[in-house]
Image (tube, rainbow, N blue to C red; front, side):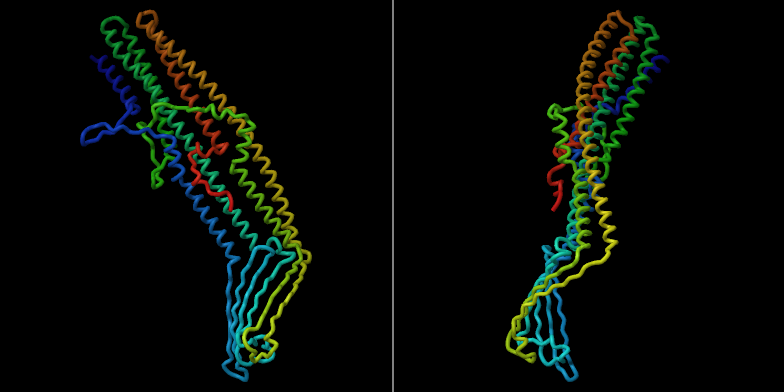
Length: 496
């Protein structure tokens, strides 16, 4: 009786260890009809990460800030209107005047257009003679052009172009982060599924030992087996319980890791339950990416946002270099204006009644400019450093893609070998069980065959996992947005 109670304890402990991994279903309390829990898919994880991962949302906010800087820089080219006037309310002269002026900056040639209107009434002293107009006032239009310094770039245009490049950089940062997040989310998902499969294998191995314990008890009671077989099988149960517990611990850790990417609508993490594990670990068709290394590396170099970010940095350095070269040039500005009196001749006389065309030049040349020259040297050095960094990153990307292709090829070969090993070990285990039942084998060999088959299945699951991870790495390295779950609407334009 004591022995039977002990055996039941062993069986109960084993069942408790195995129970969390059994397939489960929700139950409708109203009619007690089981409701199946749908398995969690890779697409669901990718969609959740793409929509709710905090780092992506943070960079999207930074992107909006960069767009605001572009709008701010464009404000330098806004139309500006100003007006002023005065009236003498006492004294010998009684002149009054009002003026309005509109200015509009244009980008080519640093052009500035202006147009104004002035109207006066009464007398002015000779030193304010410029205020006289005809009865209808005086209108003027004109344009100011930069012929040397500020011809192609000035501080305002630099700030506008740099802000546009800053927005492009923010867009690329979002894309780069999306790729990295989706890659890690996919790897976390497959690791969770792979460890779930490993738990299933060890639980099945434990179940076999538990079922055998019942059969052995009957055989011991009938005298067909020695009692030592019960002790040996209990030892197997403990060892296999340890495997289940260790695998389940790893599965829980993998579920916690996956929850970092799998989130609800509010952005809170969701820890997936074991019931949501898919029944198998599918590897899909990976033969489609058996590309020659040259084609894969070319695709990666063309698409990778890291290189686009470096090209963006090079463009910004070139823009800064252009501005500093501009600051060393002499200034030569051309001003062309037309002014015409409107209406009848007033107090100012007939000299205000003509249409005048004025052409003016303004020239200045900076001397020494050591500060600007020093900045120019710094810009050239920074540009060269960025170009070298671009070459280094290109070489690293090509190396990364070649290594991933090697990993993928090796993973596929190891998977084929693992499948062969599972087939062979399964045949050996079935044969050994048959021989044991007929008395031609011993209990030790049966246990060995069972554990060898289980280990082979674990290695096959690990080979599948390695293949899936290699594929995820390849998709990220070659920027396959569709396979990473990144829709076109999630990818902002690289530039403006």
